[in-house]
Length: 233
Image (tube, rainbow, N blue to C red):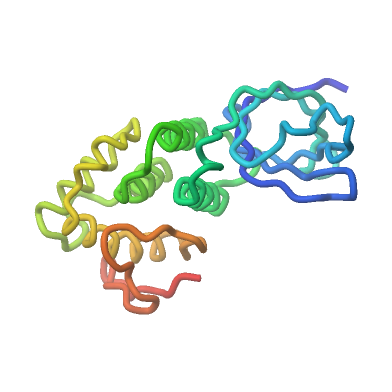
């Protein structure tokens, strides 16, 4: 059987049996993939210690002809992002971003720009405390890659907040720019994006980090392009 290669980041994993794991990846070549790592939980497994959330690796896998669960064969670990494990806020932001990507991408469909965006986020989280506006910057960039970016005048925001939509939504993701976003503009963007995400994506994943001031209360979103807001899960 011909093996395929990929570079990817572990989004999450969970046990399949007492000794095996199902690993959910975001990959450069194939988008989201699921692989089974057989025997990964055994003490002498070649996978032991190499499959944790947000680890980046190159790997080979045997594609299943009957399902979307493929078999992981070999793995070379490149980056573990240890800073995420030392700071809850960084870990929470990375986990929220992973859930947002999983919710809005299809399996086995290449999304190289989104893969690159997630790598930019993990890189920023590795070097310093995330500024509150980094959440908004990631959401704006992801919406743009999904073809849903806010238009220049499609919503009612103060001119200052409107200008920050444009600045934060630029690639590459930049924590230095996010760190200079004024609190008042960020609070308005927080409320706007909460409703915008629900309107365009159906829901906001659990665990969206708070930023700016208070998040928009569930059921109290402003109308987005004439459509009443819906409550997040």
